[in-house]
Structures are given as structure tokens and as C-alpha cells.
Length: 246
Image 1 (tube, one colour):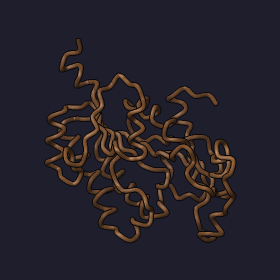
Image 2 (cartoon, one colour):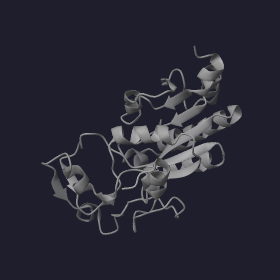
Image 3 (cartoon, helix red, strand yellow):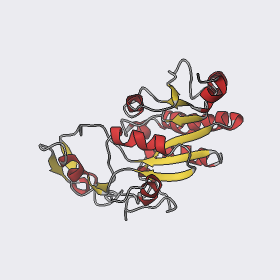
Image 4 (cartoon, helix red, strand yellow):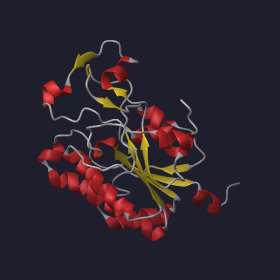
């Protein structure tokens, strides 16, 4: 029988577990006991709420996925909401985890890179191209202050591909949620920053793999010539850790 001490070592708290991405964690069989608190149980904007929940559950890890993503336009029209949920909320998680020595895994985005030249390594310069990405980078800044942490810059999307159209001229590292989730569990004990995603390719080519009827569209025609069309990351660090040769 598993004693309380062992149980604590194998437990994880996941914020944002009811989201599109977070809910996929529940589909993976793992040795860890995972807790998915709702907002009433753990409010990321209430430091006392966070501390009380972590004191009760005593997890070894906390995977922070809660925050504000879509629609992207809300980060332009309601910056206070963007700041509160993605920067202040993340900062609260850092403070609470640091008090108890809990390993914090922060789910960030490949959008923190400029998106101009592509093949970005983890140590390359950052220059987000929209407010959503700036808010995620703000969260990263807080996480960086805490040494017992891991930042995963993830490029992922729903399965099946939900759009009728896909960019021919935008290169990225899309991979479906179901493929990314197992990788997160395999990286839990790492620290620093790791790019996480699929092979670099255009959004159209990615979508075509499973959605035959997707239509071609061009980002530069829609958003202008300055739109960052090469958002691809170098995922060699991830592949080395996971011992992926291809």
C-alpha cells in the first residue's frame, strides 16, 4: 500500500484542467495522482486560495495551464484581463510554489519568438508579435525567478483540425493536444526552458495530413506583409531528452 509520504511525491496539481488542452491530461495513464481544482477550490488571482489548496494537497509538481488565450483579440481589447490572468495569476503560482518548494511547470507558447526567421532555439532573443504572447512572456518572467521550475514553449492545437482554411505561408510546429500531453509528463523533472511541438511545416501541410478538405489561405494577404510567417522552433533539445532520432 502506498503511504502518505510516497503519495505526496507522486502527486500533481494541474490548473486549467477543464480547458481544451488541459482536459487532455485526463486521457493519459500515469503513475501520478493528479488533482484538477476548479476556480472555487483554487483561484489563481487569490494568493491565499492557492496557498491553502497547495497546503492541503502537498503536490510535488504543479502544471500551470490556467489563463486567457482565445479569442486572441481579447488581449488587445481588455488588457487588464490579459494581465490579471496570464501575468498576475502566474506570478501568484510562482510565489505559492516557491514557499513550499513545489516544482512549477509553466505552459507557455512559441508566440514569444519574433516569428520572422524561424527555427528558434530556447536561448534566442524574444519579441512577441501580439498581446497574447506578451502576456505569456510576462508569466515566463515571473517563473524565471524561481529556480525549481520548467517553462515549456508549446505549439499545439485541437484534433481534428477545426478550421476550414489553413495558411500556406505560415510555418510552425503544430502538433495535436493528444500528442503533446504525454511529452509534458516525460519532461516533468527537467528545468529551464524547452521548445515543445511537432516537425516544422506550414499550417496547410499539417492540416492536410488529416483533413483533406482544408482550403489554402495566405497570412500576408490577410494581415499584411509584416506578419510573422516563420514561427517555427528548433525542437532538437526536446528530441534529445526524449531520445527521438527522426
